[in-house]
Image 1 (cartoon, rainbow, N blue to C red):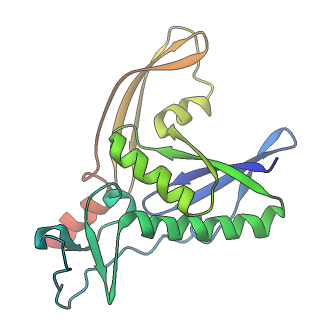
Image 2 (cartoon, rainbow, N blue to C red):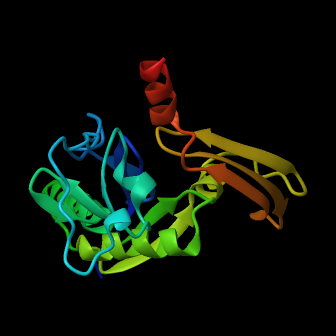
Length: 205
């Protein structure tokens, strides 16, 4: 059986790790240190596609793949018409290539973190992108849950507030530790209130 890779698919960074010889080993990839390039708005005309409503055709303007995934939109980048799922799949494919070059072992699947505020449609789109990117078996793990699992704050009965202000999404979650396991009591988030959105507001001002 191949290795299961942990993947933090972020808006601006993408980090990966593997459990090996009793410990977690961080795996470098082309998106783990340098930021993923934002998709800048294409200045040319957007032509209407046959059978696709004009309002469903869009361009990216200081937006990220993660923020758009799960949205029913055709994305125009230069002369290429694509979707956020396909773009995300390209990233997962590149990440897998980097991982294979590092660990030299078969990869059977991945555990991908997902913001707790993502809808079922967005979760399904992220899972599909990872599968298209070459990860055969894909499991999704709420990023807030993974944060608690990686910490030492797991005292029985304790109530915890976990929040994250990432480049693309802001989330807040409340958990109670029951029998050593974090039980989600409440999630809230906004995929248009991340660091990129702060940058855009400052630039506009």
